Image (cartoon, rainbow, N blue to C red; front, top):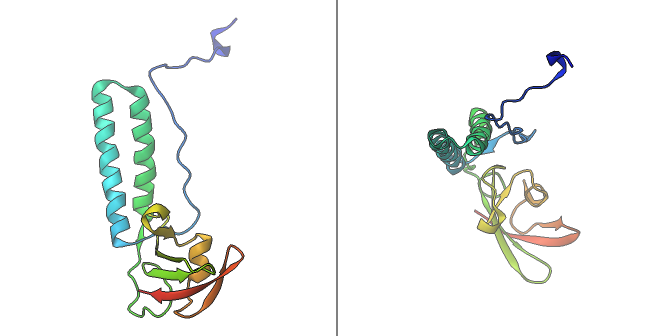
Length: 153
């Protein structure tokens, strides 16, 4: 068989597919921008360490993260919380009362900084979209149930 038809691979190189990038605008809070920069710094350090150790899998993983965080940093749009805090908006904290009496508070943030277990949700999440531009005392439907907006701060 001719060598022209044999695929040669370099076993030293590991390629990972890029992480998907959201089609939504990359709105971030000031803290979110700092988190992006910190993540980029961590993965650049991990990349250097992996290259020094010759760990090709770790090099590939770190390079993938560097590509992702570089792209996110390049498209980040810092959104300042509005001075008027009468309606739910990006960067503000909203407190709801569910129909069973439970209260829940969350801050509306960018996609990369959203972490529901820490009380932050993405501005494109169904929860955030249900309350955006709504004010204290208004009822909204979330997951088929009515909730009351108690506070916007």
